Image 1 (tube, one colour):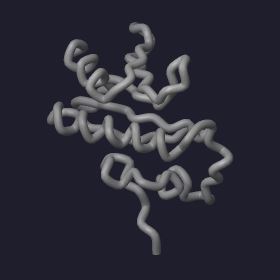
Image 2 (cartoon, rainbow, N blue to C red):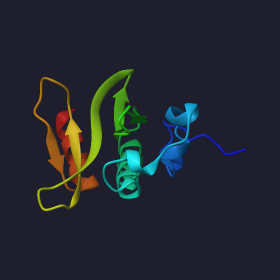
Image 3 (cartoon, one colour):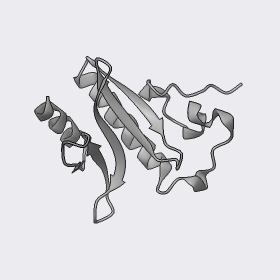
Length: 122
């Protein structure tokens, strides 16, 4: 029997088809708009770094009905940010950071940039 991914443990984020969201049926790669492996790797790397640098935070990989994937970063049961994989205007991979309705959305090109944004937002 195949293991189900743990959405709160980035080390298990290797195959989106094993996310608990897909327990009701198989994942179809054609449902995802983009390069799933690159995007999943981006999110896994970001989540691991966040957990290493901010010990009081937790992360969770989420999947929406349209197969959009993102990481919710929380502290004390309150969402701090949501991180989505995206592309720059030039087509390079980057992160889209959503702080919620009160703050403008931010794009950063690297995990280091993401960590800097988090440090300044605290």
